[in-house]
Length: 415
Ligand SMILES: Cc1cc2nc3c(=O)[nH]c(=O)nc-3n(C[C@H](O)[C@H](O)[C@H](O)COP(=O)(O)OP(=O)(O)OC[C@H]3O[C@@H](n4cnc5c(N)ncnc54)[C@H](O)[C@@H]3O)c2cc1C
Image (tube, rainbow, N blue to C red; front, side, top):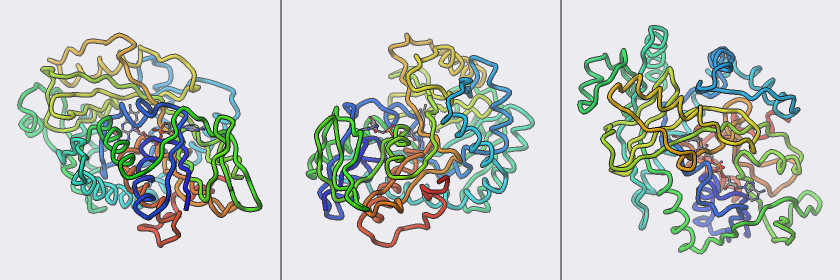
């Protein structure tokens, strides 16, 4: 079976691994060089701890407060764009307590499956993406977040995810090399860290050796439809034949999905990161600064990456350095001895998280065409859930029972 995967981010490449293993003839088509998109400069957390979807009652309240502050971690550029308004409305409707409760189990299951698969990948020949099971600490400063931390630990424990509160002193003992100004932390020993840039490079090399074909700098714009089948994709003018199509084009998937008769509301949640090598900033664990929503990732032995912000903005707006300044200033509030220099704009990486309208990914087949699978909308969890998504996609394409119940991720849930 000839499978065309649209998009060579983590979701497209993970799908390619399992489809190739299942005996498919796989071609990945990407309009870029596949070397710097959202799947590269992210924080690299593999995090079963993230069993709460982006759409929560708290984020809507907090987001409205943050919107007026140029350095805040969350920003929505006011706009009358119809798609953005629809997404916002759906997001607000989804952000309920019961949605959060319903999402916990599927998010836990896909994350645990993914973690297990990354552990397998790390042993494959040629794969060395610094997969490290170092655990993650969510630092908090305020009383409100201390209270929230206790709740989080209770919820995680109920789901079978190991979590515990670290008091100020224990937290300091876990990171003896740096002064920490925080009231405490939640520690998730089961989370892992990897170096996403290296993971993506490893995947490209591995897949090329396995015979997967890559077509770069070609944009898929249209499909050849014959009855209830897609028989080809149109890429920059020419046609490529297909027995099956996998849509994994990240935040750009929505207009293509419309051509399959489905609505997958999505916006780009722009985030920034800055990475330093051989610096005095050293941590033993991945860290999230809860109030500031900043992620700090020690990577690949000698690197450290600071990332954050969720900026809902049209995809062509220039990067805002105030947001990066906000990240740098937040770090100092928790690590007073860390004087992170603000790098020049060209050294700042940014990417667009494919944010679905309820914080859950869209994974599944479409009903109008018998040979189309959708895999996108992973928001802030595309790396964490990537390996499992790839396996699930291959199961859908080859029509074998899926490793988990995919109904919560149905791509037609907003149709
Ligand atoms: C600051 C930041 C930190 C993050 N930290 C983490 C983290 O710690 N853990 C985690 O799990 N996730 C994290 N994420 C989120 C994660 O990076 C994304 O969820 C993930 O990269 C999305 O992968 P994707 O394959 O869906 O999309 P992408 O990586 O965006 O790939 C989509 C690809 O499709 C191609 N494409 C689009 N349209 C077309 C077309 N018409 N024809 C051909 N090709 C097309 C694009 O060129 C692109 O290469 C973070 C994101 C940011 C911004």
